[in-house]
Length: 132
Length: 132
DNA sequence: CTTAATGTATTATTTACAATAATACAATAC
DNA sequence: GTATTGTATTATTGTAAATAATACATTAAG
Image 1 (cartoon, rainbow over the protein chains, first blue to last red):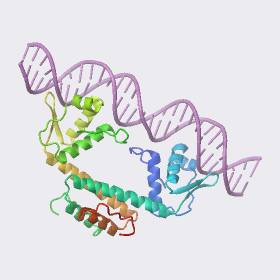
Image 2 (image 1 turned 120 degrees about the vertical axis):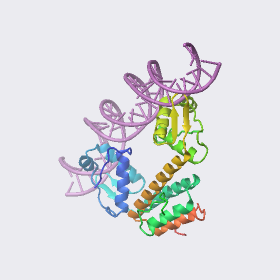
Image 3 (image 1 turned 30 degrees about the vertical axis):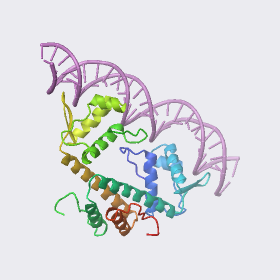
Image 4 (image 1 turned 45 degrees about the horizontal axis):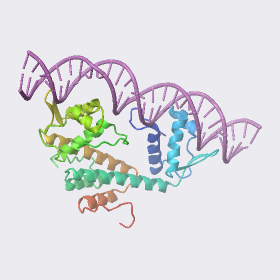
């Protein structure tokens, strides 16, 4: 369910948190689904239980899951995660676009590219190629 | 000219490289402008010369600057940096949007947001607020 | 030619932090 | 009461960035 990239600069616990968010937002993990026990997941992934614990703790802190000693960890309302995800993505998107324009990218070219990608599904569209 | 964030996860040499790119693309640094000497900049920033050297070396590798032993380091053709910058930003933009859609964000909401931001300059526009 | 300033290279050390290891404690289910 | 679960603590290890200290190479200036 979780896949790690050991070459990544991102710490394992952050990778787990990010994947948890995507699993919930993507509907793979549904409300009240029980997550693997800390020790179990650590064993499966071949990492230390403390690393999984850190990921779970952070997921709980932001409201993605709920952990109860003796019972286990469970997915909380996916709407919370979806809201987190949207906020995060739109924040990234806005920052990226704002900076790009600040440094000289043409706003119209950006709109054209985003439209081609989003509306027409033309993922091959490359605004850096003059032919467009 | 360069400002460091020691709390950042990004290594100092990467911060320097990113800022160099923006300074060139933003026109602050023009073609053939001489950059501060490795030792000078290191002194100014309070970091080790090796760290600055690493940043300069990477900037030269991608064609942003040219370094000559005994003479110094100089800004090369800004068009090269602009191309690098555009490629990089559009790559980030596409990846971000692709993932967002994959995890359920409405393409139309994305287009609306980008249009509001880019075309109308409505940087207050927040697609996560229902009123829009 | 000598000197100073520049970029470049090398080796070792330090530092920061993620990750591991080994336990212990706490709450719940059976 | 035992097992399973989450949580907490302390110490250790591993890794990569950053530092430290030099040395070398090229260029400009005199």
